[in-house]
Image (cartoon, rainbow, N blue to C red; front, side, top):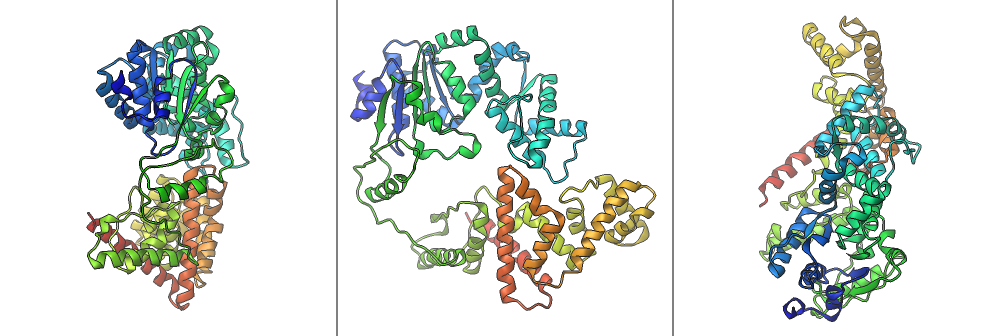
Length: 547
């Protein structure tokens, strides 16, 4: 028993040895939280708590595996349930699926499967998706499920198209899943929360089974997860949660900070333990972080400290523009590399949104610093950038079929693949460009009147853009974005990725403005496209060269 407590601080020991009743562990960064959780599980086992009565839930399989390995080292292999919320819910539904309208042998649809099911639903309903993406609808449905909103209860939370289409599609999509005896990831939480709310006997039985519950990163739980945890802690409120409101970063994904802030209201008899000693950072880093985080409005007070050394001073540098910032960062890295003191792989640059990478990429390229984008695409390789630039390519070269094929239905205009193929066949037979074939759409026998009308509307759009193609690049791009509706589509979307795409588009306008300031009017479009293409080629080559 002493071995389990050996080396723990007084606060850590208080958390580990707490047995009955609710427990809130406010764990600062680098404070040994995982050690406390795993030692507490081992302590419960040593106190005679049956392993099957212990339930520990995390947010990732990796975290669960790490905890499982540590518990086995401390207490041997045990039948403790230690896993993610979704895995736990999937396990429960194998026994109680009939209570929520599916069979026990249901299929769990991963993201790809659920997207395919949603697309089948959209196609079956013949939904007009002009200006919308299936991913935006999927995100709206996911948000609803994580907030325990059924298809019948769903109401749009904005005036955008996404909410209105979701209101129509959500019930049909859910019906499609039931016909297939399937559940998507969000259903796992929704179904179990519904099961526990609507079936008191089942809830009581599970509360009796799982008498000691632990939840990691409680500040990141959403409404569905909160309902599940609360329902299992009514008769035996031996609920221990670890977390830190100051480390909550998943509000955009549905995390509800109130779950941890109001824990003491939910459980008035709670014992609160603060893990405030940091083992990871230097004193100076911790001091700066603490001063900054103290300005948070919604938080639990903690006084972080460390026995580590002072370390090097923290530097705060401000620059007049993001271009100056990128150039100085690149210059500092280049100087260290050229001096032989550092290698390129010794450096990492973190930025807030993907749109900020563009100036950094340019600065690195100009100074010959090899770099590699991690989990992201280089600026000029991003879909929205290639979409918009394709309009410029077509304006510069009306014979560019690759550009035409990219933009003719972007944003969606209802011009289908069959229509495009028939235009392409007509162009080949007649020995003309695809754009000229589009101008003759009404003369192509296989293209019906409605489709021909849509094609000619696109041609008219192209002609309007072409009439202004001699102006500054920023103005041309602005016209493309407004005339096509591309920018409005992104602005009206509630989807996170669309807001990031909008930021990238706005950064492209900044690129165009900088270009206009340094280039003559003659041949401006061609020069801009050439510079963009070379930037892509050079940075891609350098990215491949890094180790």
